[in-house]
Length: 478
Image (cartoon, rainbow, N blue to C red):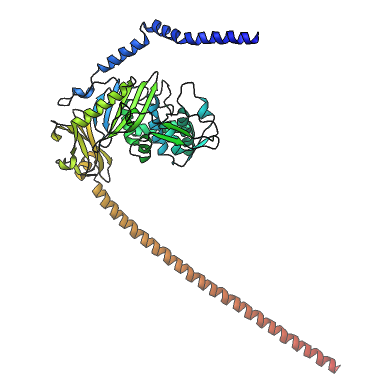
């Protein structure tokens, strides 16, 4: 009877599981009146019909339509934004969150640091979440963790990295999450908020295409990041608890030569997907002249790769560097900090068509940043040394005079210090002399006292001898 009951129960469960997807589809149809596949296609075509914002710039080459709801291509060295579609619209990032996780970890730990997996770092995982099977108590290196996090998109590894680096920072997991928010704000991100290190869905966890391009440009400056995302596979050796190695592959299709989406200039990136975020993709490319970061958000599966290729080709075919050193230097600028600074312009737009915005970053050294724009579009920025006249005009401070006055004040202070030192030395010498004189005086006083004691003792001895002689004479007379 027991076996019969088990068979009946198994059959009921099987029927229930088979019916579950159909029930879900039916529920979705009841809510929207549209089949989910049809709904997806409606969203896809609606997004494709939205033109890039950069296409509205006069004289700007027309960029491709893309299926992603938001998209951007940024030059990672100059900061120029050469393609943009709803770049400041908020979206859920999914696993491209892990790019920021690695940036914060890189800046607060070493590759050789240990990553210990706690119960918390593993217990949150749900069915379907990407992972590499780490168990509580296991230890791997920070370097191996980066590969697990970015290549395999392992969510438990991302949590463990955040937890362990948070401790290195003097706090915990939440300390790391706060640093994610602080660091992105420092980079100029204005539409992001982060509540976890892996990108699993949370309504309060969101970003923009523009912000992700800024974050990617920042982390791309690190060799450690480039080494990870350019790798096609990685093996984590046996750990303290598991005797077998773990080998996993790169998920980004544009880096695999045998894949239809392969792109010869691709240098890596990060994939992402949740039901709420749909497909998200960050990709970097380097053709030997321009290093670009492309981001697509709320895209549709393989369309993300097609969109990214189209955007890269558009930029490489239509834009070129205009070296700032070859242009007339604006009167506000004394010099560019680097001779290879440039802006990125398409054919037909001249340097003289640009406007500039100058930010003073250090008044005293006259350092600043100049950002060149075309009809409000950022086409590149550079570090500069500003003229004394400009800094004085904008700040009301003449730092040249202040430096001179400061130098004079320093001379006065130095003179005062020298005089004070002489006084101290004089007082010290006088004190030493006084001590010596006092010692001599005390010695003399003690010597006189000693001489007086000796004289008294001699007198007493003479008196004792005289008295003894008198007593002897008296006895003899008697």
